[in-house]
Length: 274
Image 1 (tube, rainbow, N blue to C red):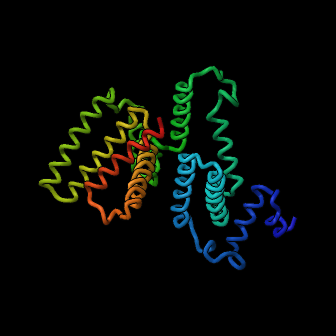
Image 2 (cartoon, rainbow, N blue to C red):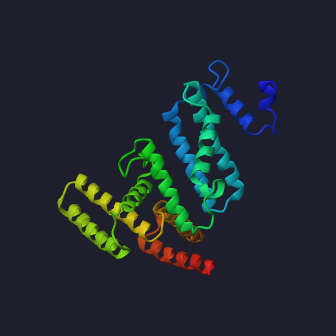
């Protein structure tokens, strides 16, 4: 099949997308913007697309999810095309690597191990397999392999989870809450008497311990904060709507009035979920 025919063949699946990517990156006939990109310039878009996938799932926006997953897939194709051009690997290498990894990490499905395990035991086995893989890559330290490019809150959660595997952890959530009180007091002290840099350091310590509390409570902090953001947007938009019925905007209102409307909107939204 000619390359142009493949590009316009809606039944061609992943091969069509790969050919589109090759055409976009063609130095002579491709898109100048796509040709100018490299791994570092595309990486932020990859992160953004992953969050848009998570956002669509959070909102149960299934029609949108199809498109967002496609955008995320395109990011993988884009990186693989650049890697192939540089002689590093191909998209098929990516597929093969992932397939091999999934088969290796699921011996209870694809191997001879028993499938009769609890989800908790499967999680422990999964972590053991990953630890062995890290050892093969000469990642000796407990914290090796926790990606630097992760959002800071998610990375804090993963660092603490990794440290907990070797016993570096509080025995229960009550100890974490005590630590939160301690860090909050240190933040207040820094605010009152120390430099802005010290305030930032103490604030970071408090957030780090909050992420640890989430882990002890079985809460993924990044997901919890996304939900909190969405809830804030819903309620603040409700305040704006109530003000609009009064012919006002937030900047025309007082804090006291908006706070009262916030409480009313909060109660109304909670009543809808009951």
